[in-house]
Image (tube, rainbow, N blue to C red; front, top):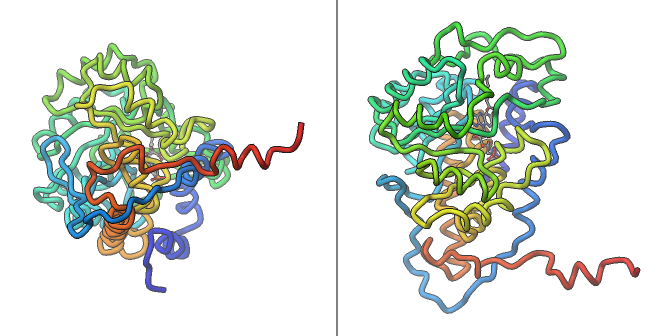
Length: 371
Ligand SMILES: Cc1cc2nc3c(=O)[nH]c(=O)nc-3n(C[C@H](O)[C@H](O)[C@H](O)COP(=O)(O)O)c2cc1C
Ligand SMILES: CCCCCCC(=O)C(=O)O
């Protein structure tokens, strides 16, 4: 089959991956309600096209922290790309560079930051951190990231521990031999499989510092001159608090449904966060973005850019760098098509007037049972 959409890559990737790896990639926390809700929320908006607009020169390029992107999206931080293809994050860095997309590298990358940076050349990249108990390791990563040309640090704040992910528990999931978070000391590596438990969850309980609060952000600030981005904010209250603490950008995210099951879909939380922060604080979003139309909806609700998670892993699992690049290129192509066909040729034309609720409220009322 010639893959023409990210969903085509999903089907092809599934056939290539071991079942437990597939479950680790695809799964969510608990009953996976939030995982499903992320997708469902995109179906609650329809696009209101405008006609007889000059759409002869659509443009979806943008700028983020001074870096130019061919399209308003990047690769979300995801651990262990070598689970998808042998080159791991090197393949992803090359794909992101070729597609003109931002790359956010996970603290649990399987390739060294410096080689990822070489593979990415002058393309924009950020480094994601979890707050480990080992602060010396965090300080070391912050320094190495700056030296290797990373443009921002992304602190993920929705994971005081990795959630109970039932698929991983049932599979007794562990990271296979030969795949390791090489940017951390070997002593901090995820442990072996234990029947009925997830090695990832157990490791997070040991290594993540769940006592940190807003007051600790100043420690990280002192370790870097890079912009600081918080990933995993879902409320206006926390968004305001983040700005008060000097955070430079936010990612509205429920971790792709992998952390708090029952958390709102990211797209539903986006408007309250956008409305809570000053216009010069970029708000990004991730979770369930699978189509160019999804990107347009997120941008219309005020996101400056989006992060793409699992679809990139599907491309990597299919064919490494070319697969991941094609997934990113498809999303850009679909977004450009949406700009043209909706009569909104630039990103500045995407605003809330693009969207209407679906089904419309009167339709819902007609279907309500009497009484
Ligand atoms: C396999 C996998 C590993 C992930 N690893 C990380 C990680 O190391 N750090 C992080 O902040 N988020 C991690 N995430 C969450 C993503 O950054 C992102 O929030 C989520 O995947 C977006 O949803 P989507 O996959 O539906 O696009 C991971 C997600 C997946 C699927
Ligand atoms: C202790 C290893 C944790 C890896 C977690 C990766 C991640 O965030 C995920 O969602 O999975």
